[in-house]
Image 1: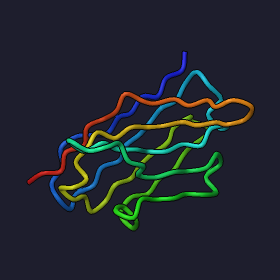
Image 2 (image 1 turned 135 degrees about the horizontal axis):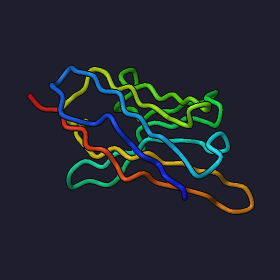
Image 3 (image 1 turned 120 degrees about the vertical axis):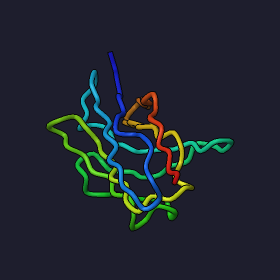
Image 4 (image 1 turned 45 degrees about the horizontal axis):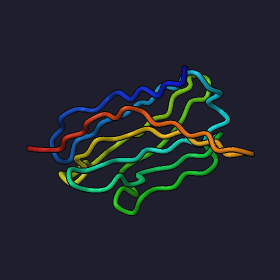
Length: 119
């Protein structure tokens, strides 16, 4: 069955770094554009970063530009989010999202991983 499994979250001090991973299975990973979303406490789930099927295109929320980097390895069926210079306001549950649209829409969500930035 389809699975997106995030890992790499945790507690980090402001200014620190974390690398999130999302391992995909059960579908043809290279057909799907991948994104990272996050939901901070009491807020809506927001797009953090996007990467196209083969990595040619990436986009970032303004709040993370220059600090976060999204990448993917289609041989390992994994998408990554490198997060540097973390701020307290980056605290959220981070979700992996896969999307493939042709005649119909295929979309999948991971279960989320908690990132807490605190001193």
